[in-house]
Image (cartoon, rainbow, N blue to C red):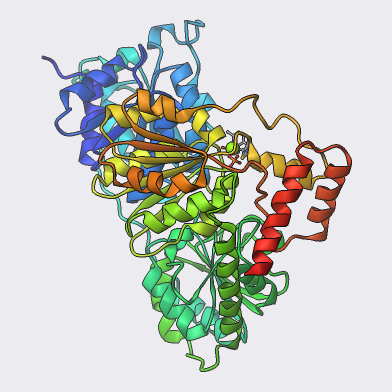
Length: 585
Ligand SMILES: Cc1ncc(C[n+]2csc(CCOP(=O)(O)OP(=O)(O)O)c2C)c(N)n1
Ligand SMILES: [Mg+2]
């Protein structure tokens, strides 16, 4: 059998260490599929049910492993479906390569069926975005695409006309006018140096040493820098506040950790930002600037010179890798003896933990979503990887999912899209077959890509899916009320049954509406050797209140009530019971 050009693509990916491609076939990529088939002992093709999920899986793979994620879709509609997942990768700075098919070259421009110029459509999402014209280009274009992903932590796209896909791999390049040989490069990548200049480190140390109340805000860039964060925070007596994307960078059970900020943060996290005189931002581009200090002296370390200093006026931007920079900075910091600022925040955290416990009340019906999350937290293993969807679930996960041991947490941080939780979990499970991989998702998010539960069954992936089934687009319901408007268009009629669907398709599943049954179901799902799902009917009227409710937020609530908010009575009684439980504690 003659070698086809698509094999040059697949072989080069293998040389780069790619072992998994997520995708769904189509007439625009049959040549690439054949190359994957010919190399199936060296690279696996994971067949999914929706291309959006394939792109989320590539992003989840990158987030879970730190390696490039690759997804594949056919020309036209398949490629279009990838987009949301690719933007998730772009906005969260994950190295993801998208491969798509394209109509055959002789028909391009004629308006042939499914002729969508994906190289134009992807121009914004993929900073390296090319069409292959001739086999001789392929290895070098793959090298550039992969290096762009790794060097710039972003998305690349290669689209491949289907006649070129099946062309003889040895087809001689046209050659001609350019004073150049056919492109030739090697599949090698070395990251840029990770330590800032000595002078910059000294300036940063001077600012941090002069601070009396220093707070650290750590983000996704600090993942993998746990020991270095601890060393620096200990010297500075600084509480460590984490963004949600950076939740996994530091254990929640460490006394230096004071939770998160923003709407789903803790009061100790908020107080750290409000009261600090010096802010040290590590690997974060946290966008909600209302929650950042307005007048603190600021040092920020970021891998990108473009982002360092982006959110607040920054005295010393440090450009470097978070772990290497913290390690280089630590010897320049003076250890202080008094840690008043930190101790006050730790006291606030003690109260906060008590308050959280009261919210996870096992006796309340309907079931509190916090109780569901608390049970998952209690029974999951110490190296579990939990992926959450966007929605009120993100608030419960932010607060009740404790990072301890080797636990991880993933969500769509910057795109904040619905539905990545399940695909991320599938990708994590494929990469780490021995670890417990858990999806904590909303009923809305699950319904969007629920066919991927079949992917779990069909690939024998023992993922655990917990659905906080509040039968509403809960997050939006509360947002509408905070604006002062009664809810509209945020509840479907009737309550879907996801357990029946999972059970009848080969999963172990439970539908729970009595809190007394929940703990046994959570344990059974976590212990099950195959895919398992718990469809938990929770209280739709449980508001994801911020740690500190502002006057404007409370006013919006009251106005929505006055303007005819439905379910007023149950919302009011939930709020009242939350407050009562908190006071009793
Ligand atoms: C793709 C997409 N569509 C819409 C939104 C807006 N949105 C954010 S959260 C949310 C509600 C999600 O509902 P569900 O998954 O049930 O979670 P809940 O908030 O109820 O916990 C919506 C509609 C979004 N972020 N992404
Ligand atoms: Mg919901």
